[in-house]
Amino acid sequence: MEKMYDELERILSCELDIHNAIVETAGALNKSIRENTLTDIQAYTLRHDEQICQIEKLEARRLEYCSLIGKRLGLKIKMPKLASLIEHAPVQFKSRLTDLHVSLKKKITELSRLTVSNQLLLENAINVISCTFTFIKDSQKKYTPYSSKKKGASPYQAYSLINRTV
Image (cartoon, rainbow, N blue to C red; front, side, top):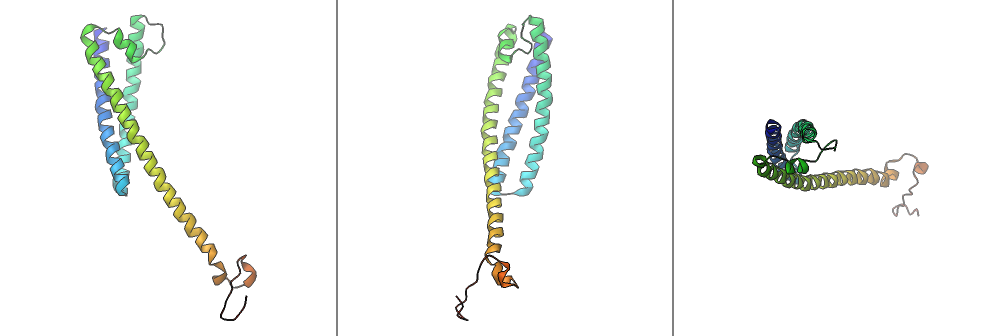
């Protein structure tokens, strides 16, 4: 049983390390978005994706070990929560697992805050681009009568004071 808790501690420690790295990446991505540095945005996005894959693999292993430990403890829950496993942990593991769990929660909260900020920045940038394209498209319609060969080709009427047509 101690080997399983030891492995769970190792998995949580790795998850915390990757979450620390992904928080740094998200912060750098946030700075790149604010500075509008496209190459950095691409690089940090790729790094972010790789880190997410690492977290997903560790998450699967953590869930596997949580399930095995839960079965060994005789818990009737199919997938026990980490807090309940820590509660039933041997004394030598409780404090370390609790510290890892609390640290991991803090990093996830920080990552969530940065992710929301990045998402809002990107949405605003996309809206600015969309509005710019809409403005350009609509402004071209405004001057259609001046480039039109037929006078009736456009719903807009051009009025000229030079030849006194109204």
